[in-house]
Image (cartoon, rainbow, N blue to C red; front, top):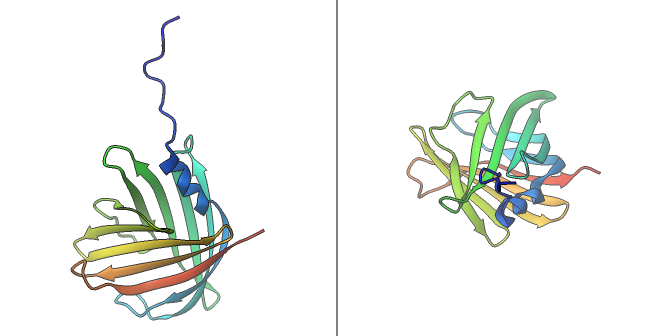
Length: 159
């Protein structure tokens, strides 16, 4: 029988590393005042799982403020074996569609991803604290030099 030259590749260790964020999470967040919203505390539920043969981490979150859903997001994380960077395709309830994914990599225990658009630049930082906790912050910069926090949070695994 002929060898199957079209067989799908296997996920790399870089893909598997994203599984640290898989699971059900409860988050305590601080939303900073911005042009999009007033600041204040929030809570979030995050659900994330590895999908599509282990190549992607799919993450959905719902943020609550004052007892109401205030914000929701859908993130698709992967490792791009072509340019050897991590990618984040981000969609949220503000309705903006980024022209390209955020891109970046690991710095110690933090996955740092940056994307630009006509509105400015966003930086997502996911810091692994331990098996049951991670910190996340989203920052904004008009010029990708001076970064201001938009959201910070601590997320704990739900048993």
